[in-house]
Image (tube, rainbow, N blue to C red; front, side, top):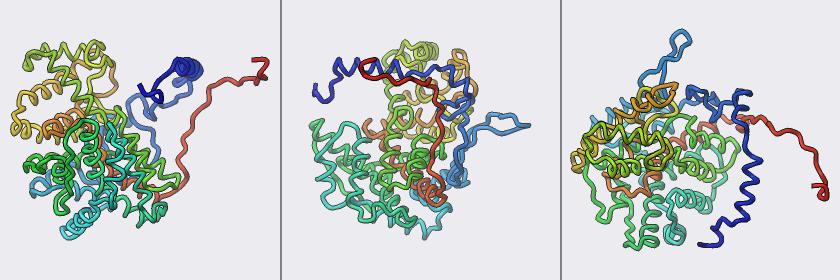
Length: 452
């Protein structure tokens, strides 16, 4: 092992000291009414700001009582279900329309959308030799780190990198939205070539194609894809583009933007947040859990076997022994996640095209059985349902997207939302965001060295 990466006995000794002196008595959180994770016991977030960009609805108030309801998601006041239904019925792609809506606060006319698509096409490029000098020279096994490094490096190519005037920040955010597919896919191609020994294939983007089409074109050796594949990937981008100001990475965008720093530093911080397995990396856990399940459950139609496996997951006896059924439950939604409901309709049609109907039925069975199993085993304060991560990993696997790109695909979509929230924070700039922490360490008397 590289000595630089080795955890030595001395480091282990220091870690024990750190852990001993940094562990806080859990009862103190209740004593001081601290909302851990900035959420109350029902999962409702602590109000930290105002936004016009999106809204999540998971309950209604009746006589001051929270009544759970089917989840709803609104982009700039528009129901996401109606948005998806609109562009699907008109047989066009939706991500670019949604990116425009999120950033500028209104639905574009046909002319405005075409102009915006042309602008994205113009910006869907990278500085001269950037791929050779930055992406190919330092391949990484983690595409999110590659993406963050590339974003920070783009700072050096921007003559107005530190200009946080609204027009300049809008320009930067549109450019990043356009270039994220290139940074992500080229980063994967570098990894696949230099670390996995496969052929290096770099396609140039087609400015006339949608974001979803360009991702598939850039990734596949022959650049080919079906209309259904592109449509479903586009729907995935739409559903991941935004999810309220309180999710971890978007809140990060607000926090870092409030300090007055540049766009590239802000988005790199948001990427670091999204990388976490509790956030953007959750769908990878779902895929790996199902791979394990398919090895253990011999009959995918046997609900008793499936239920036994789910109980084993909760008992920390299966998969990663974390006691979790990945893809089930959400910090906000209770009865249903509208994104999962929308996605499921398209997942079935793709499974038929790919010959994966039996696997889709297994997913459907788990979606149906898991809430009952969890309800019998755990005390829950709100309902449990499948979230967007439950199906997205399955979709990406059917699209033959490599596992390394699952979270970057999330980032490609969410860049639209991050950009909108950054601009909103700067337009309504107030104080730097600084929540309070209560100190619970007792006072200590300082001792001179010879007395320690």
